[in-house]
Length: 234
Image 1: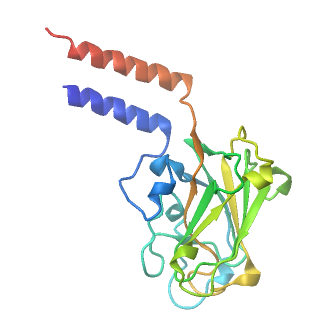
Image 2: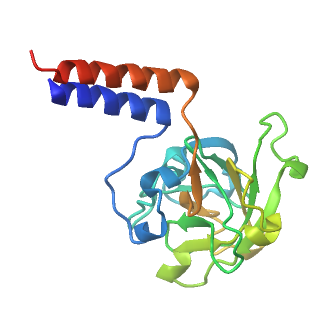
C-alpha cells in the first residue's frame, strides 16, 4: 500500500509540475542543475517556409522533437526539427523559468542542434508572449547570434549564451520564452529536408522552478495526509 500511495503522490506532483522528467542522459547533463526540467516544454509558435524544403525525403518538422533534453542521433530527422530557411520557433518553459546569474562570464542558456552541420541563428528571450502578434520585437530581448559551422564540429552543436549582458545583470527577471530565428545568409543547408536550423533542445542552465498553484499544494498536502494515515499501525 505504501508503494501505491507513493505512486499517487509522485504522479500528482508530475501532473501539476509540468513535463515529466526523462531518464535520458546526454553529453552536457552536468551543465544543468535542474536536470530534465531545465528544458523547454512546449512549442508556442513557429513560422516555417515549407518552400525551402526540397529534394528527397520529407521535411524534418516533427515539432515536438525540439522539446525536452537533447536526444538527437545520427541521420536525417532523428530527434530534431528543422524550421527552414529564415524560419522562426518560439519555445516555452512551463515548469521553470530562465534566469540570469549576474555573471557575464558564464552562460545561462543553451541551444542544442541536430542534423549534419550546425547552422547560424539569432536568439531572443521574453517574459511574456502574445501569439496574436508573435514578432512584435518590443516584447523580446536579444541575447546573441550563434555562428554555426562549416564542418561537422561536435562542439558547435551546443550553443551556449549569456543573458546577463543583455539584461544589465538582473537576477530577478523570469524568462518564459526563447525565440530562435534562422539566419538565411549563413546557411549550411538552405534546401532539402533539413533546411534551416535543426533544433534538438533549448535548456535553461540557470533556472528557477515555477511554484505549484494553491490548488496543487492543497492536493499534495491531502495526499500526504492520506499516506500518513495508511502508515499508522492498526
